[in-house]
Image (tube, rainbow, N blue to C red; front, side):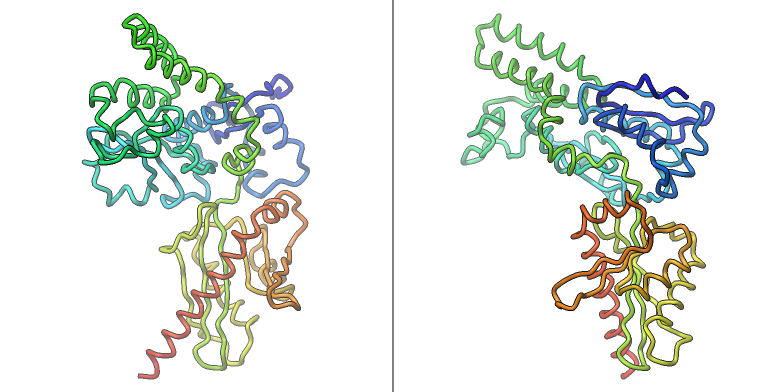
Length: 400
């Protein structure tokens, strides 16, 4: 495999075993991203497994990070690569869709919501888009394509119209047919990875408007074309977009948080909560009534919870196990969850201070945790809340 010729541009990279696509990822710099897989002496476990299988690498350059995310989504949807699906479930995939109404709007939806969603109100579905904030993608698309967020013929003009980001749906200044031509068709083409075709069609529209002396409309399209051509510059200059919105290939797909509620010898319970990078996945939470521990011992209760959890591989494999506690809890989890990163969060001497206790020295994961401390504190707090609720419910039910 020759990775020396990789370009220093945005795009997607494709890892193969022979002709089978194992993984597709997006990058703001193909060269640095792909090299990082082979330069780290110790990778996160799923990456180690992936690298062992890879014998061919391909890539496709794009003009911008956004287009890389769109192209990645197409490949995931078409080929369903093994390592893209690892640790993912239908709660994790996020899509965007166009509503089926005279002036369609752009919205987001998770895959598990699609099962009960009324498809009759959906015009077009795009995705999935892993590891990016789809709300930010939607915001950028609104800006690029003047997508309506208002209702036709409102009493007052919407804010977007006042800042020239709405074509006048709220004021009745654009017909359904023209809205489809000016907004929906270019947007759909762009989300299908056809930016060049979008620009070509917009240039034709601009010339037609100029020919008919509709200079204001022609100028608006000229600005739109320039914005589309400059997406690449925006994605690099706006540091927050690169670091926060466009989360490149973080293999942290599943975080499990554990806590024990133990207020005496009776009604001892444990909790397991599940998070991904987008937040809690509540229908995967588990609660445990402690059966084997007679004395008051959080460590022994936690051991029972881990033993019972490890009998259920069908629940998925966590990338990080988080325990509410310090070194003792972390050491127990390390012993039982082999090859999985363990994190403990304990209350410090100052009750408001959180102490992070790491189960290993994996620099990549520790750096990720350090950048996302609030997420992991939320996991710890949610595990605590869920355990307390179950403890109270159990105590009340057995008293009556």
